[in-house]
Length: 441
Image 1 (cartoon, helix red, strand yellow):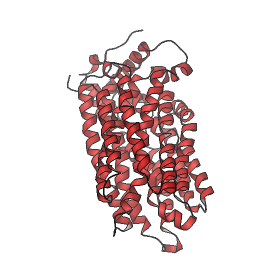
Image 2 (image 1 turned 30 degrees about the horizontal axis):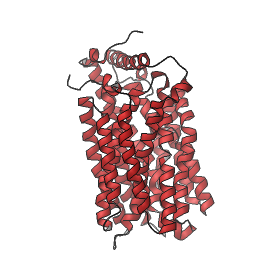
Image 3 (image 1 turned 60 degrees about the vertical axis):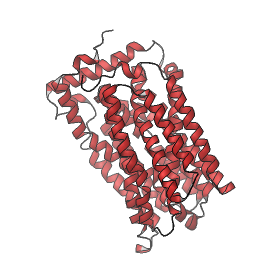
């Protein structure tokens, strides 16, 4: 099989121009979609007390409902990503967004724990495939040496969602009683309707494949297609000739699943329990809780973007995944000490570790997977890894209701992050660097 070394196209002006246009035109759109996505899956963290007061949903029921989303997500994510491979991003990603918007809108009609569980499960079904779909989308548009930066910007949208979600959700909760509706109902109705609207708009602007991009010149389309094809060829040449099913069960794939599982444990604990921690600060109104909850994510955005650019330039990623996971472990451990304000500061450390490890992890996963299983492989890693989003809130909720404290659960998160940091050193040596070329070369 003939392959084209990445360095052969590194200085191609047409390639650089095409990549810049993609970053200007497509990245902002998928980042906006991700911001809405993260807002809609995590907004329940701000209405936990309201759901308990109005519907009798206690800590354990809340944790289970928050986690059921990820069970559905895991079940349906791989088939969803395979369907995206068939229908393209414009059709499939916008379908996903409109579907989850409808479910979020219907969340305003839940009446008890059972309907809460049902709607959270359906939200997972609707959202399944969005994140890995975008990760796969990047592999169809960008050579590996640009994906670290793209992934960091995209994941900054996730952190940005938490920055936006706090103040926006806090403001909507202040509408409590308007038109006879509870503030949490206003939140679900407004955010669900916004998702549907953005999904419809995105359908007119997303471009699925390079040959369909009218805003690229013929030379730019050719250069970009050749660079992506070279990466594909190098990945396939490095893989054994075996079935997709066996490739998906390779130890390296399962290792990636475990590492992302540990990353998700920390991320979704922060997501679902940070507002409750902040709520313990006396005198803060709903809007104030939202603003303070945004601080850790603002810190994470700055750190993550800097780390993404740095690892793109050096082509070295694995050591920094381990380092970021250690930082996450330290942050979650420190959260168990001190006052609520100290807890917020510790959450800043944990959020930086969580987001930096995730932003470095995905380019490694993209490049390390055999070219024949990129779409289902990314989906499998994301879906199994995201089960951390089920385990973390379910266990933390159970422990809080049973013992009155989340301390033991947070210690467990620190241990999981440290185990993942050690496991990251076992990822196939040289794969992440082999296809990565320093940006200035």
